Image 1: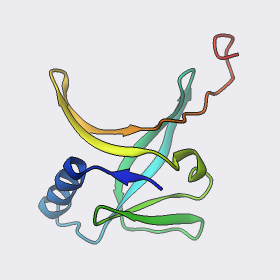
Image 2: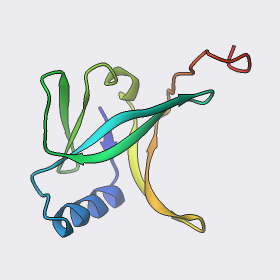
Image 3: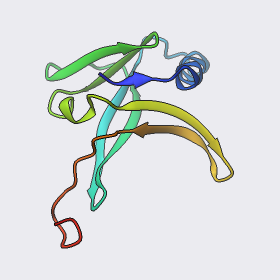
Image 4: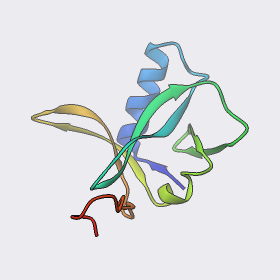
Amino acid sequence: MVNITDEAASELKSLLESEEKEDHALRIFIAGMGCSGIQYGLALDNEIKEEDVTEESNGLKVVMSSDIEEGLSDATIDYVETEEGKGFVIDNPNPASCGSCSSCQ
């Protein structure tokens, strides 16, 4: 199960309200691959597909394709503010490496 921290939930709820998208879910998707493993992205989405898995965390609906659910089983979505900026991050304690380059093997 993907967990959403209190800080991230508060920011997401404010975002959903300000964009008048309270009926949307937070979709997690694969944004790319690299030597550090799978890179995930986040988007607001109101179209649930047949192959999707829907979870709820901290009062928010989270949607993802069933083929990435297992890889995100212990992931946490947080909201951070640093000197470089602010935004949502996915902390996945069990990332998969790609195995496509010599430094991964």
